[in-house]
Length: 267
Image (tube, rainbow, N blue to C red; front, side, top):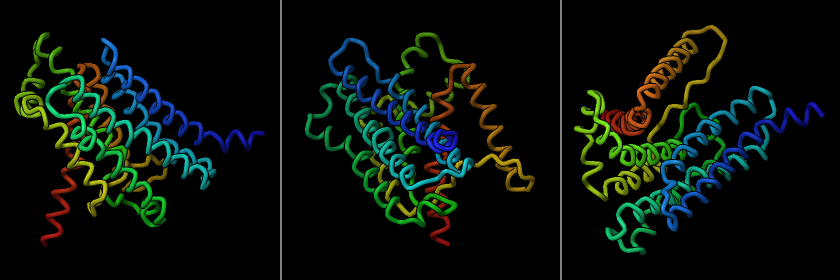
């Protein structure tokens, strides 16, 4: 009995992620026909799902209960939460915010990139064991793509409130530098397409540092990275700039590795 409970813990975490994805789909569907928009709420649920997704595999390895079933259900949860929901999120965002900017057929096609390319990536990821077991990700992971899309939409959705309440110095710099994301209606869609194409790229992406109590230089460096990230996150939450910090972090992670890839490629 104890063993079965222990074995099911990672799957429960994965199913929780899947449930958050389903809830996001329901809320986004309601946003199309309701006076209240649940777009930002859906973004927050997916971000929580990303945290759960980062935990299930680590918990399974820590408890020594990794299984093929766990890997398969993890991929299914990723397909829903980090592929289907981001595509639906983009579609609903443009339908609600810019109802006359795209015709329905074009918007359906253009917003489907995270879903279609994400599904292909997950299928390849399951088919080739070396992609799963390598120290780095080959191509952009689907959770990272979902984080980018959610953080951009939160950044745009939170802009009106910030402008009404008044920008602090940090916000003033960021919105001054990234005003083009807000001013150009198709920019979010374009960024989502470009980032989704990176799902199928040969760009290497570092995995999030694993926290270990074994004393060595690499673990110490990883622990420092995690602590610094958590400190910055706590400060940003206190000042209610978490969406800006998240957008900056994920943008540097995604596009910084692209620059690094081309720099090394041309050597």
